[in-house]
Length: 187
Image (cartoon, rainbow, N blue to C red; front, side):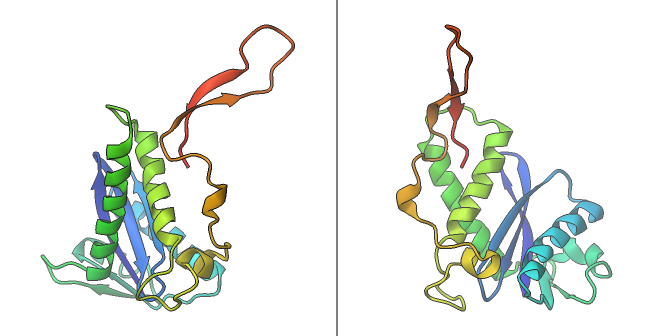
């Protein structure tokens, strides 16, 4: 069972899906909330599960997703009543936004470009997926390991925090021009 909803960060719209039993989160930037774009993103999210042999039987969402009912068949679309929310995805969005908020307030920048917000949303979701879900099917394996087959994240190999300003070397020629340029870590 997959649960889906939209959330907003600094004026940007994201589609967030979470699997009910595994706890795997996927966050995707959407430019508009049209039927075509919604279906395109939901299809990409479902393809992630199909690639590992999972069968998604249900999609739980609010009434904004009603337009996808015929498009997602044979998956059963369960639409929640007006002014009610799908609890799993709302809780997952709250957790993701708390993570994003903590990182944003720790950054030394007064303004954050859209590309940085997009990568931050991906980074926050990846971090949430790196740890086993309390209510999940496994207490030892992370959702990323279960759904994508990736090995456990080794935090000893992480060298840069998100948003850190650093100097990056580039291959240069044999002239006196500089070989370093400034960059901001986005992963």
